[in-house]
Every structure is written in C-alpha cells, then in structure tokens.
Length: 260
Length: 362
Image (tube, rainbow over the protein chains, first blue to last red):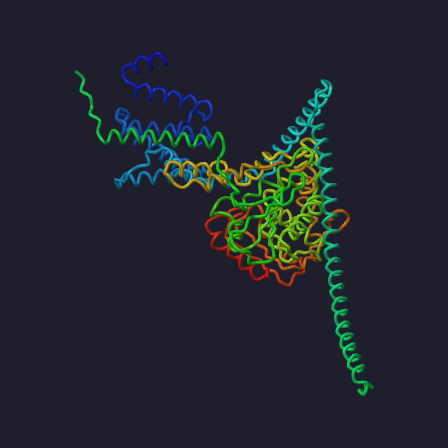
C-alpha cells in the first residue's frame, strides 16, 4: 500500500495525501467503529478526529488547487478549521465553550476579511483576540477544577510529600554541617534570636526611661506651678506687710490716728 | 550586473521598525526573566522606631500639619507594605500627606529564620501597641487613627478590642477579613480546610512559610488572569507603546512575597480559616479574650464588591459585632488591590478616607 502511494506521490502530493487519509481513516474505523468511517457512532476523541479528517478530505477534494496558492491555502485552512469546530460544537463536544469562543474569533476575522478591513496578521493581536474571547469560559473551567475535591485529593498529598522531603532534607543538612563543625542556619538563627531579645530589653529600658521622663515632666510642671503659687502668695503677703508698715509709720508720725 | 535596490525612506523606516520591534521584544523578555524593575515607596519618610525587622516610618510633611490626630497605617504579613505608597501619583500615603495628615507606616520587614516563633500575640502586644505609643510621642498627640489593610486590619481590630480605652480615636479597615465562615471564604476556605491542608506539617517543615508558596496560592485563585492575562497586558503595553509604570509597580509588588512567620501562619490557618474563632469570640491572645464588642471608637469599614480574596460577607461581619456608635460600611465596585490603586481609587476611595478622617481628626 505504501509503495503504491509513493509511486503516485512523486507525481502528485495531493494524491499522496488523499490515499494516506483514506487508509488511515479506514484503519481507525476498523479498529474502533466497526468499519464506519463517518464517526457518527464513535465516541469521544476518535469520533471527533474522524469527523475532522472527513471534513478536511471534503474541503481538499473540492479545492485541491488551493494548496499551491498561499492565499488560497490560508483561506482553505480557515474554512476547514471553522467547519471542524462547528461540527464539534453541534455534536456536543464543547462543554466548556472553548471551541465556541474560537469560532467567534475566527468569524470575526472572516467578517473583517470580507469587509476589506485589515486582518490581525500580528500573531500577538490574534492571540489577544482569542484570549479576550476565550478567557472567561477557560477561567471558569480552571477555577471549577481547582475547587474540586479531585484536585485537592491530588495536590494535598503532593504538598505533604514535598513538606516531608523538605523536612528530611533540612534535618540531613543540619546534621551534615554539624558533623563538619560548620555553622548551620539554626546556629545563625539562634544568635539572631539572642540579638532580638537583647534589642527587646534595650527597647524596654528605653520605654521605662521615656515613661519616667514623662512622669518627671508632669511632676516637674506641677512643682513649678506650686512654686509659682507660693511665690504669688508671698508677693501678696509682702504687699500687705508693706501697707501695714506704711500705716505704722504714719501712726508714729501722727499718733492721733485711730487704727481701731 | 545585479541592480541594487535604492535605499528609500520606506526601506529606512522598515529597518527602524524592525529595530524597534526587537527592542520591545528585549524589554518584554527582560521583565519576564529579571522581574519588574521599578522604584516604589518613594514618598519621603524617616525611621522613628525599629524593632527586630519592623520599621516605623514617619512621612515627611509636605505642608503644615492640619490635623493633630496622626494616622498609623498597618499592612498584612503577606507581601510588602509599599502597596500603600506604590508610586508617585498612585499612593494613598502621598495623598494623605498632601492633605495635611500626619502619616506613619509600620513596615513588618522581611522575617528571618529567627522569627518563625512570632505569633499574633507578639505582633499586637509587642509591635502594634508599642508603635502606637511611639507615634503619639513623636506626633505629640493624645490619640491616633489606625488604617489597617487586609490582615493588618484584622490585627488592628484585635488591638482595638484588646485595648478599648487606649489612645485609638478612629479605626479604618480596608478589605479586612473578620469572618472566616467557609461559605464566605471562597477558594481559600476550600484549600485550607482541615481535611486537605496539613498546616502543622508545613510549618514544622519550613519554619517560615516561603513567600513563593504564599504567592502561588494567591495567584492560583485566578490562575488564567494572573498567569496569562497579566502578561498579555504587559505585551500589549510594550508593543503598542502604552504606559508601563503602573503595570511594573504592581507586578513587582505581586511577586515580592515575604516569608510568613511559622507560628503566626499556624494561627492564621487554624484559628481563623479553620475554626473562625474571632467572630465567635473564642480568640484569646496572652490570656485575654478578643471581644470585638469592646471596640467603641469611630469605624470606617471599606470593602470591594469584586474582591475574591476577602469577600463582602467576610468584611461586613464586624459591623454587627462592634459597639461603636459612629460606624460606616463603605463598598466600592473594585477588587482587593484595585480598590486601593486603580483609577477609581483616586476619585472614590481616597476622597472618602480624607473626608471621613477630616471630620474626626481635630
């Protein structure tokens, strides 16, 4: 079968493709679908693949010459991919909506091409358009997965195993370095802890000094106030004494004045 | 003889376009390989106190202080605190300083191996309580306001509950989780459930839980957006010459995870996510029960409607537990971090905080 294909392929690559496709589809159909090559009774991936191959075959049969013209080849690829995706969606093989999002992007591009507008030749722009269209359904699928029991049942033992490994590795490293009489991370951390404790004591002393200063300031202010009060009262007493002295002097000069 | 094509303007232009394309490609690859390189946390500040790795910063006033009540910002133990001062013109701290507030920030620093035994008791009693005293002394004030973001808000709320007659005048909680009922915690609640998550083994093995592990957990909440969408945005900005600075600053912050002190992590998972002790009134720190009903100061509780890290029910729960007369629950249509730094933040969140604090900082 291969020799026959090779002899014809040297003249016509399309013929080679056609024969390869037919043989492969028949082979898979015999293996999985009891010889049914339409894929309608096959389930899952093999059904989708057979349908896809049939679609490709159909498009190439109708327009084989397109392969020799880059623009036509691009258009052929485009139309073929769109049809494959649409068929898959119709067959219910797009529960997450990825293909629907991709079809939306491609239809948008097709519309722009027909309208004569520029196409996103820039691959980044194309990827960005696809991401904008597909990120929501994609995020939903991923977020539902990572919240599922199945995901946790898988990752939890993984994290635990990793933790055990790290613990064993660290312990082994510590013992190894100790045997070599080299300082370990624990030794350095222990010294750092002592420094932190020392800093804590200094901080506590600083706190006490500040508190005492505040108290003294408060008390000092009170003392100053009291002294000022005493001073004020003394001044008042002094003023009265001076008045009394003045009156006494006056009495000495004029004994006739009656105090009482 | 072969005819040489003359060099036209079009040819030169094509050559330059190709060169520019390669330069852009190089820029993108540099970011992917080396990480985002941009300076952050640029608002001028000075260190007023240090304790272990923590630094208490005071932001240098840009104008005369208008409000005597200083603000102390407290961030979470996950990622770095410079999200509050991300970059010029995109910084809550810069905004508050420009409005005449006296702003302080408690930076937890990067924990080392020696810090694996730090617990929430240490952070609240030894760090936050002391930091507040330092703030009041430095600002020469009798009372202060606290602005707590995410886990920093949870710690601030616990401080306010443990020290009800303290010098705390106002409490602002920004996307602060207090209720960890499993139905409200989303993916975090599922991943940290007792059935699937052995936090004791993790802490006993690692000591401090690596920042990369915490970071991976945070990114996995929205994996498609975080691992693919982010970089599509990056290439879009590079290839079409759009501004990059905000993207670079955010990317730097997202990937700048710090180790989570082991014992604090154990408490966070066990007491908060698994046993939800705080809202049940079962949380006890250094023998003292954390009773949220003892909070009586003015409270502004801010949440993001699209926050998938700290959901609305998680943030709202505290409103029904505190005994403050002056309290407000303010919801923005934003995500956990977007609420603080997106374009809307400048129009909604920042003015809201300003207006609310202005009336309560005299």
